[in-house]
Length: 391
Image (cartoon, rainbow, N blue to C red; front, side):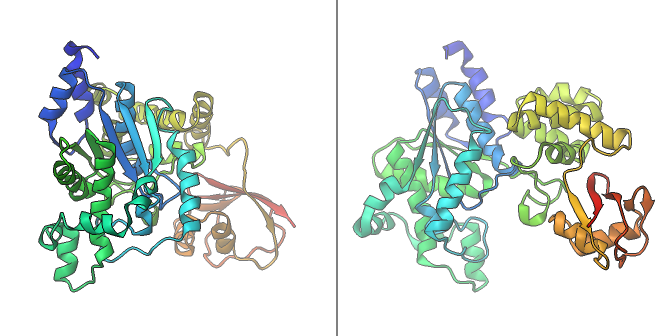
């Protein structure tokens, strides 16, 4: 990119970032016309990606569009150890079979966000398997226990008397060694990864390389607007979820959270978004995200389906879930058997609030059992439907 566009590149690179260390070095390399090697590593521990995972990946996409080289490391080797970042106890070690399954799921999903150009996909077992015992011991000699305990989660666990294994000390060193192997110019990660990224800088210096710049991205809040997005908190939006689910969940966001999603997940002008009517802006965000992970036609269909259900109060054109009614089966059990995101307590609460209907008739008794004659449509909350059929 031409010299006069350096400022534009830097604006794109730093947008939404929590912290940038080494910005001066990035600027200097851009001015010299260097194609940057941008490193990102992910342990394939969760085969289902959600929007929280894509905050960093959207930044990688920006680097791709600026014609820089992204190296996406799938940490199949480091997954055997487990990243201790933000954890109060050691993470269980994954089996080879679990890792292989997750790697396959990861590869399938990452290209919903990333372009297939300007990217190199590599497993870190390629070089870490060759390191051997002697290599790991030499690596370990480059960092002290005192330096490791500067890390917040380690120091907290140590103070609380929770065990820290030596393997957990090894993890940041192995992640840092990835940077040495790649001679990375920049490494990107979430704010919880800062310590590991700084280790990479130190190891590069020890190996006579210029230290990588580091760019940390904030952790994205989930749909509740409070806790970080996580499947365990049931506040996530998965990029492999049905289009209607993605669209509907985005529409449930608060206006304030919507703007944050725009800032971290799109390249839209935030000033322009702030001037739009919130409802219009939210629909546009929902459309853009479904389009990103599926296609334009699917996004249009998801938008039309949302309007049909929420704005016009009608059933969806097609109800995918069907339940064969059997006498004596509890309504609560039927719902939870089909929709895994609901607990029995959730459904009972909805019934008490008048949020569960059969053929538009409100159900009032949480312990209701089917008599075997029910037919039609069971509606749960605002957006979930089950077609009832006699068995």
